[in-house]
Length: 267
Image (cartoon, rainbow, N blue to C red; front, side, top):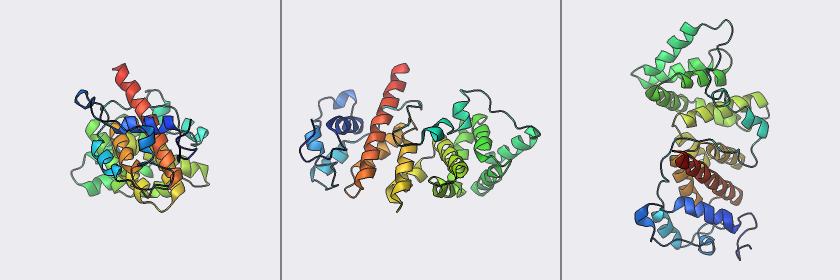
């Protein structure tokens, strides 16, 4: 049964699931007042109208319980072949990403050592050099991330963003060229898995291209990260969010909640 005044694209179950993800869940918060789907339509509705209760709802939002990233099912609307190909490191099942024939292992290792440099300018240049290393940036960055320790992995993710590679990749995300779209999706996915999410959140919040914003939301839904969940909860409460994007954000919140809950139950 649909809520009176709600869009048919926003069923009660989706609204409630999204709200459950955004509201406090700690033991101390169990007695806190919870919004019903009917009340939620005044906060997250098809028209995007702001309700005075929105401010109080925003104050209730908190991070979901932290957990290790866990991949879930691809969100509806994202190209299935692209998801299957999304990233060599994810599809390898943890196996070592193979070295291309004729590729110098020493040269690759020396190049990746640049991410340990003290200056960000050096690390940014290393990211650009790695992008051009063997004509297959997705493969190169997958190998670099796979063999990096936590600190280097974080620096790789940050360098993808600060070098301008992430911004360039975003422009190719909806390209009609499948190869460019694949490379862009893989690079942004690796950046996100390395812990750098702010460039993607900024695209969702501020890009003038709605199709790009939708694509990035679907990418974020694959992250399994509680910080992404928190950011999307904040975005979902924006009054000016276009309806298709609002629906995609709430679906992503629902998917991320399932991923994080499953990951927590496995620990």
